[in-house]
Image 1 (tube, rainbow, N blue to C red):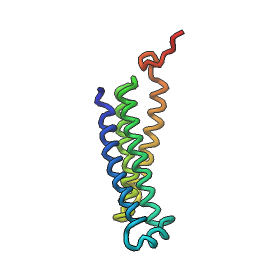
Image 2: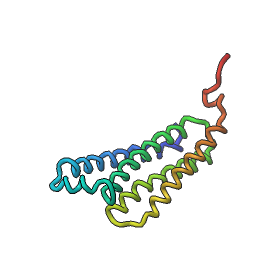
Image 3: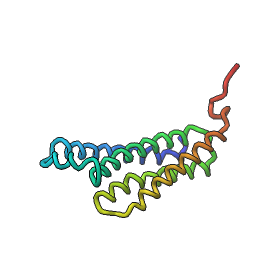
Image 4: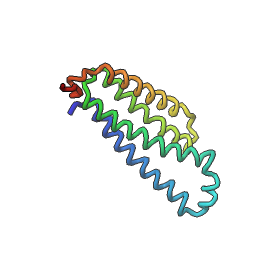
Length: 144
């Protein structure tokens, strides 16, 4: 297995596990915690809404890293480009971490912006790299 991409797969699974556990915390707060009615009433805006955004984006960006990592391992993408995509996708995970840090600690949304921009850039660079990949090497050639 190529080393570029493995880090994304591992980090994606770890972040996925973390945000899944965080989802259980949100379920507890909504369904079982004392004062759950108040939490539900405030869940459409403010910190409660952003807490849910962190959970959703954390799981999405974690899963994207798993997929991106697999594609970097499996496809014939140039090493420099693969390394760039890998790091951009890993930095993209700053977005959901930044949302959570904003909710819990009042951190300014700089991590959210940096992570979001990094993930979009990773998608664009990966899309271009896939278009440039040699389909014969990738096993996508058609036989007649």
